[in-house]
Image 1 (spheres, rainbow, N blue to C red):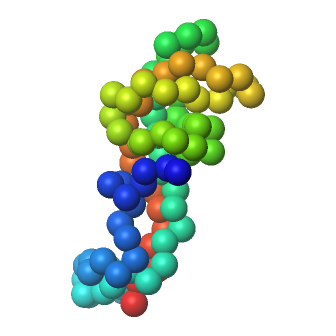
Image 2 (spheres, rainbow, N blue to C red):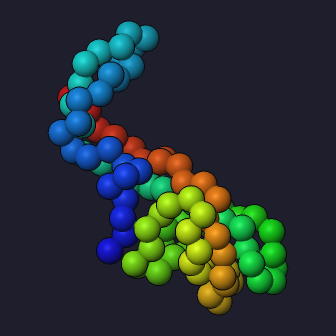
Length: 93
């Protein structure tokens, strides 16, 4: 399984949410997970790309400097994770 616990806030977490220009106390009720993963390719086509989680093997821990593989044009390419950003959508109440 993908280790997203370190990156995505879990349901039930208390947060400060902006609503109509004011910040309010809220609690996360639902999460639609979406991680943006930037990697440096170690094989051709070389360079940096941003890839969705679905392009990685299922056992990847999304941590900076981890060596793994990513699907590029349907072929596995060795890479190193450069950054991981949470672009998830959170429903709060």
